[in-house]
Image (cartoon, rainbow, N blue to C red; front, side):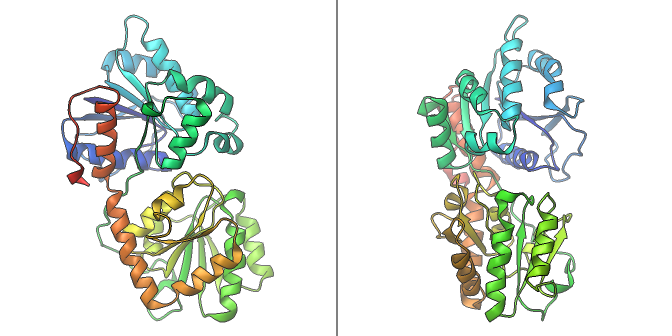
Length: 378
């Protein structure tokens, strides 16, 4: 089976990291030739197996890659093209239609939907919900990272349920090797530190987290690090100042390796209103960092924590509930319990497990090859 993934980057963006991790699982499974087709010059991840190909389309925008993508499909003849991001799905569907005109590409196209279609439309105008509803029915299949997103996309786009499948976003097993503390607050002997990692958009509700932390700080000696860049960062900095938290909370901006922070934190706290998966939760779990998350629209955190079993789950927008969960996580026994549960959950999201789900869908439902993988590889 020859698979090609159309994605923006093989390494430096969220979608590219998911694809590269999934490619690791496919390499472990064997029998699948995988190529990452990307439209950026970002470097190849150093941990990506040598047998995974990288094909660069030579443009920074997917809309400018249509002729090159058509040429790639005709010349390389992958059995499946899998596209990520809604607007990239549109380009992939157009390329598939054009490439099937002689000299024809004979493969199938599968689109990926990471969030509710209507929410994607609200965040990015290019992810047009009406075009998704009109065009997704021409795909041969659809995959999504959580059961809620699968069900919502099938409903909204009026797809056959059998044409859609759950393929969780995978997480690599952490090597266990850490450098020195990346921030003075994370040294041994300092008060416990909560961290949050996100693109600082309004929907990520970092304002809710800062208010909840202010409540926690009235009763406990603790600190908060807000990691990430985005339009909300100036507001977060001003909120920290107004609440008198400048000695205990800091918006660090972006960092090269957020896991170095999470690995030393008391817990990672995710207060977002919308998430189709919440990759940051499994990343934190993989380094033994307990997680606290809101039950955001999209169902990702509920799925990742399995209804609160593997991490603390509080109602969306519930400041008091978030503060109470943070206070509870300051207890060493509670922290140790959720750290171990999180490690177990991250193993369930391994590249091998996600690759198994993908290949079994392509083989069973789409009939691409007579080779299902055993779930024992999870």
